[in-house]
Length: 181
Image (cartoon, rainbow, N blue to C red):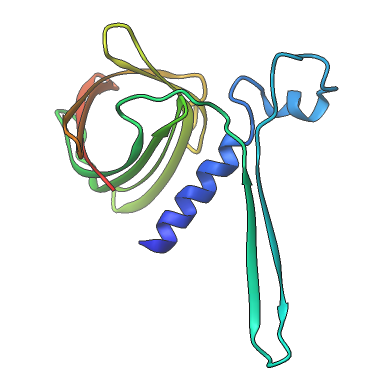
């Protein structure tokens, strides 16, 4: 679980380094004057270390964090899927981890479709509407055609550590129940 947690955190950090409203092409071509209202945010990680005179290795981590967004919601956190139900598909072995925070989300999924393992990730913006629903807008994903897609989710905290989300996918009503990690 430690390795999965580190991979999720590293992936989340890597994706959050690029401002959500900028495409990669714009980032490469940007002259830093095109959008002066945008502020760069980043995570810096330095490793200093060496070998002591006794042959022991020492490593010191120096980290600096810059905030991409201070936006928060009641749904922020790292969530592990406990249960999935759908009135249409028959996916088996479905598992998902979802991280919500800073006005964004990222999820990692694995499932079995027609006896073949399938793995996906997706990253996008996360907004809670005035009516209390959540709007996820895909920015990038391993799922073809996901970028730019919008999903309106009916999300509810059933208690401090459990989240239920219901949404429509290909005409089917899907419900995910998560536990906070």
